[in-house]
Every structure is written in structure tokens, then in C-alpha cells.
Image (cartoon, rainbow, N blue to C red):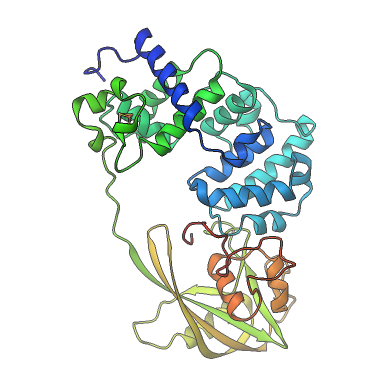
Length: 390
Ligand code: SF4
């Protein structure tokens, strides 16, 4: 930052705002959530866009807001339906927290979005960035934002050499985000910053030739824009072997609710386990033991149905899927909040894990082409354009 003498000087700030807003007026993408300043719609879009690409979010945003056009309609909804509409978008905690937050807004704020940041920050799933984005875009409150795109953009503009995610980096970059905000029009300005970070000052190869603020950029002046922010060292992916089992009982299949702390909390799946046997040892005996131990149900494992490969965080998972017949058990009643026997045709209404949806399709639970299904998703259970399985 020291190498950029004019950085944050009045003239520099004026030039930055003028150049950025002029560029945004010509290049802003027409995105569905930009057609309104309704705080509810801004909120939904901001939550969906967390760690998710714009192209993936668009169809989800349109379906979700058609089904739940207001805070009240979302608050009244069944969580299962909320998750079903979110299915394939990943990070399902976001959907559950937004559903809870909608109920809080109805209870405490008369189904209106509050304008004070303290109340907004108390909502589940809303942090400083999201609160600033909603309040600046919807109400033009003068609040800064800092997310992946602006973090990268600010780091380069001021040639911040450290890790932007560290405590020191966050302090420095939030200070930049506050300093650059104009007195009026903060919402439009914040959107312009995010757009520039996303479309021009992108991760691997910033397009400085096309950048409206290039003459003001300290990293470019020093020729170090390709090294800022410093690349993260990712640990190598870890292979992991799991098995799923489709247990049939008189035309129904056994479904379990995913663990609260797990990757698919709140969704449903076929019973699924980490395989602990040695390479090439048969998986079926372990499956039989695990289903009995976990669910109290005795099964007779049958043929291997499919092998699915997918990635979750650092794991590269190979999922072997088996069929099995129900034999007996459990002694008591199954908890319907945790375990259910369902007709394959009922699976279409249930929010399923990514691989659960693929398996449901294999057994005829979802053809991906039913006219009655509101989701009209791709044949793999995800909307066209959505990203890889999580
Ligand atoms: Fe990013 Fe290049 Fe623009 Fe600097 S000049 S803000 S590095 S695109």
C-alpha cells in the first residue's frame, strides 16, 4: 500500500468512483435479482450467491421466488419444500437458516425487512457482508461490503501483499471498503465493485486491458497483479470409499434423514456408510451389519447397482450402490423424522442428496421429465448450469 502514494487520496477516490460507475452503467449484466430493490429478493439472491456462481443461481432464484414471493410465504413453508427447491445448489444450511430467519422476520418485524443493521445481523445466516449488501442495495444505506470478488479487487487496487482472509487482511480490506464508498448511491456502487471483481478483475487472469480503474491500480503499476492475492496451497484430494444401499420392502424403499451436522443436513438419502473393509473385500457383509446396527433393520444385500463418483470438500468419493431386500426389524417403531419407507414415486417430492437423486432416478423415482414436477431439473437431478455435486 505504501507504494501507491495517491491511494485513498481525495482525487484517487473521486476518479475511482467516476470511472467505476461509468463502466457499470454500460456493462452491468441484466440479472433477475437486479430488476427489483425489494429487500426480500435482494436477501434471497445474496444468500444463494454465497460461494456459488451466478449462472448456477439464476434458475434457482427464479423458481424459489416464484414459489415463495414474500417473507410470509417463505415463513409459512414446510422446510422440506424449501430444501427441495434448493436441492442441487449445495450448502443447505443456507436454506434452513433463511427459512428460520423468515419466521423471525414475521414474528419480530411484522414480515418486513428491518433497516437497522443490528436487527439484520441478528438474523440466522446473515453476517456483515450480507447485511451490508442487503441494506445498501435495497435502502441505499451507506454500508460497505467485502466478499470474494471485492476482496480480490481491493487487494489488487491497493497492492495488499498478504492473505486477504487473515485477520489483518480482513481489517485492512474492510477499511478500504469503507473508505471508497460514496456518500450517496452506496448500493449501486457496491454492485459495481462486485461486478468489476467478477467480470474483469477475476481470479487467475485479471483483464487489466479492459479495466476502467487500471490507471488507479497499485498492483498493476507494480506489475504484480498476477501474484495478488497470493495463491492458496490446497491439500491434495483424499480418496474415500462409501457404500449406499437401496433396501426394498413390498415395493417401498428405505430412506433416512441426513445427519444434522453432515454435508446434507435436513435432506434425505438412502442408507449410506463409509466402507471400512480392505480393498477388494466384499462390502455386502459390512452393509448388512451397519444397517442392523444403525437402524435395527435386517437386510439381505443383493446385486451391485452402480458406482458414482463425486467430490465433497477435500474428499473424492467413490460410492458403490447396492440393492437389498428387507428381512426383519426393527423391534420398535421407526422414527418417521429420521427413517421412512417410501414408494419410489414419492421420492420426487423429497429433498435428496445429490447422489440420492441420481439413485432415485436409477430406480425410477424421478425421470427428470415429469410434467408435474415444478423443478424441471436436468436428468441428473440438478438444474442445467448448476455446478458439481457438493
Ligand atoms: Fe484488477 Fe487489473 Fe483492474 Fe488492477 S488493473 S483492478 S489488477 S483488472
